Structure formats: C-alpha cells, structure tokens
Length: 208
Image 1: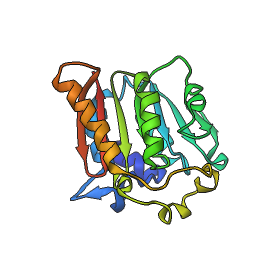
Image 2: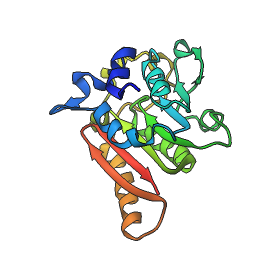
Image 3: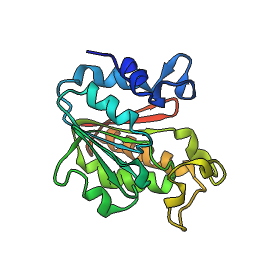
C-alpha cells in the first residue's frame, strides 16, 4: 500500500508542500502519525474544502474501506467518483451539514474550508457530536485565524459564494477559548474529548 506522502504526490494535494511544512514536518506527516494504524478501520471521512479534489482522492486510496465526503461552497468543485461524494453548500449552514451522511458518524473530519473563525466555530459545534468514538477532528491553516482575511481571501475560489454578511475579520481568541473549554472539560474528567493537540498551523482534537 502506498504511503500518505506517495498518494499526496500522486494526487497533487497541497498538504505536503512547503507552505504546509515546518522544520521538515508537513501536514501529511502529522496525519500519518495518527492515521496509519487505522487505515483498515476508517469508514467515513469528511473534508471541508474540496478545490480540485486531490485530497479526497488521496484519502479514498489511503483508507481502502472508507467513503469520503467533501463539502465546498463553490459549485465548480463538484465531481463524482467511486467512494467519493461531493456536497455543495456553506460549512456554516446547519442544514447542509446535517444532509451529509445523515444519521451517520465520521471517523475523521477536516476543516480546510473558509478559514473564517465564525464558520469554524459553527462547523465544530455541529459536527463534533457526529465524530465517532476514537475519531479525529482537525482544523487546518490556523495561521489564518489571527487577523483580517479580507484581502487574502479575494483569490479564494469560494469567495464569490460567501454571503454578504460573512465576517473576514478573524479573532483568534475565539478559537483559543474553544480549546481552553475543551481542556477544562478534560481536566475535570467531563465531556467526550480525549486530547487536544496543537501542531504548526493545525489543531487535532481526539474523541474519547
């Protein structure tokens, strides 16, 4: 079986490129650390942010018995392939999220979508209860959470489809408050969070 790096290169995902690498460790290295032992057992994945679909194809081949769901706000991101379903809509729309694998759970959720803190918080609140026991919830590109994305986001393919009221003025403190709340629950032996791990530009939350 091919490694995650081999599949990443094959499908040209950007998760292993220099922009997502710090001191020799890329996003793919982080993912493989958690997921390599579970390749045969992961059955359902949701990645928010489809772009060209390279990551979805990578995950499909990495997890041989899984179904891969993608969500993107841009209708041009839609495509159909075996064991891949692409859904179109906003990650901040509760009805859209509920319609993805309705009634089912996810072993892995990746938020690589709008990078807007408002959207990230809504998405986590809606999807965390649907992460399976022992599953992972990952937020990528957290460098974007520190300030105003108005100019940077103008080149993003999904920008024209964001609602007029979308807030591009990110406040990292709101993400930090979320993380602190999860940690507080762990320290008090409450809730369903097993661990919160911080990596360069990534937050990985493990379900108990």
